[in-house]
Amino acid sequence: MESLTFEILGWLFIAGLMGGFVDSIAGGGGLISVPALLATGMNPLVALATNKAQAMFGSFTATLTYARSGHVQLADMKLAILFTFIGSATGTVLVQYLATDLLIQVIPFLLVVTALYFLFAPRIGEVDRHHYLKAVPFYLIFGSTIGFYDGFFGPGTGSFWALALVTVLGFNLLKATAHTKMLNFTSNFASFLFFVLAGYVSWQPAVTMAVGQLLGARLGANTALKHGTGIIKPLLVIMSLVMTTKLIYDQPENVIHIWIRQLLF
Image 1 (cartoon, one colour):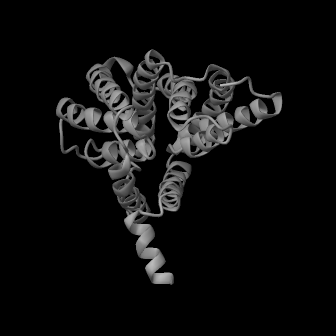
Image 2: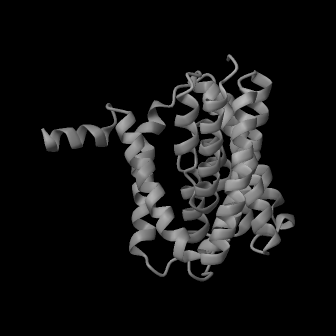
C-alpha cells in the first residue's frame, strides 16, 4: 500500500501501545489494532497479516517479562511451542483460501462462556489446583486447536488459553496469563512467517505499531505482576464481553444478533 502520513502512523503507534498493554494482561489487543489497520484502507487479509507482525513484538515482550519473574519456564514448554506452532501455521495457510463464517457464528458463544466462568467463579485462578490432563496431551489437544484458531481467525485466543490453563491444567490466573503470552507469541510468530511468505505483511504500519507494542506490553505485564488476579480477572471478563459484542455487531447475520433484533423489534 502507499506510504502513510505521519499523523496516521502516530495513531497506529498509539493503537499498538494500547493493544500491547491490554493484550499482555487479558488478551483482546486485536480489538484495538485490527480496526486501526482497517481504518487505513488496507485489505482485510493484509490487515490480519500486519496485525500478526506487530502483535508478535508485544507477546514476545510480555513473555520475556513474565519469564524473568519466574512465572513461566520456557525450557518446560517445548512441546507446547511445537504443537501451537504447527496449529497456527496450518490455520494461517487455510485462512488464505477459506471463509471464516462458521467461526464468526460460534466464537461469541464461547467468549460469553469464558466471561461467565471467570465472573461467577470468584476463587478460580487464585491458587494452583488439581490438573485434569497431563501437560503432553493437554498441549497436543489445546496447542493444536487454539493455535489453529489463532492462525485462522484470532479474536479471543488469550481468553481461551486462560480458560483452558486454569480449568484443565489447574494453573492460577497469573501463571496462566504468563503461559498464554508465550503461546500467543508462538502462534503469532508462526502466522507471521507464513503471511510473510505469501507477501501479505505491510511493513510500514507493522514496524510503527511494533514499537508501541513493545512499550505497551512491558507496561501491561508489569501491571499484571504487581496486581495479580485483582486486575487480570476483571479485565479478562471485560475483554471477553467486549469481543463478543464487537463480533455480534459486525456480523448482522450472526445468530445472537438475529435474536437481539427479534427481542427488540
